[in-house]
Amino acid sequence: MKFVFITDTHIKEKNPINRLDNYFETVINKIDEAAHFAVENKANFIVHGGDLFDTPTVSTICLVKFNRILFYLKENNIKFYVVSGNHDIYGRNPDTLPRTHLGLLESFGAIEMLDRENTIEEKFSNGNSVKIIGTPYIYKMDAEDKEAYLLSEYDKKDGEFLINVVHGMLLEKPFIKEIEHTVVTDIINTKADLTLSGHYHTGFGIISLNDRIFLNPGSLTRCSNTTEEYKRMPQYALIEINDDLKPDIKLIDVKCAKPGYEVLDREYIEKHKNDKLEVLNFENTIKEAADFDKYDYYSVLEEIIKSDNVEKEVIDEAKKRLEMAEEDIHGQD
Image (tube, rainbow, N blue to C red; front, side, top):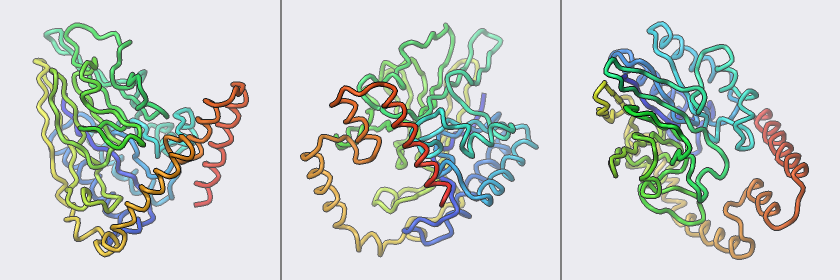
């Protein structure tokens, strides 16, 4: 089995405020490069780690340009698998997928979704096998139990090499407590032999720990102008696993990617370099006043649920209305 892993492409037509180039053309060129690399290296398929699009619905030109890449892959018998990320769905709810453009692409077979039911498996003549499952983004997935990563209820077979593709905030080391996250050392007992993660754009490369491998090559794009993103060069991964179940993983630099100083607005960074301190001070002030993990409508709803005796029907209706409101907002963009 040989495949290319890319993640967090955030396809959108509108340019981020801190980009100096044409972001849309850049991201399409990067995906196209990864697709040609897959063909040239005789990969069986491409796996995307989530946040294919920047919003649940995108412009027509985004769909057209991305579809051209999918047609090229199809002509070369290479499938494109995706785990849905938080940007791909409404209201952090994977059940809204059919109403999104990611769901639209799946509906006519242009892509295939990867989850716990829709999996990839290859069996070798010696009895060993490789299986890839997907864990889409789910609200609170980085809370205490870490089950999205640990897979404690998964029935793993003898001679099976298990790969879990997960769109969650998996990090190499602890981060600020205000943001829910999972540290690699929290999940060293996972049943997955190889965990491929997205969501965290900077990435952490390849980590081997306790006979387990964790990989995040980072986002294929640089949407923000943080110091880390300014220095980082985008990558994707080529992964090959044969019947000995010993994975060969190579991180590939994106050839068409330009240095940060050519595509990210350094003047904007310098002008706003003190803003982060002000924002952090503001967040700490808010957190002291109201014990919210994050300052958005869903976290507010979560706090109301915790603090009051609210009936399930009311909670479900509130979540539904938030999803509808978000869908209306994206529909007006």
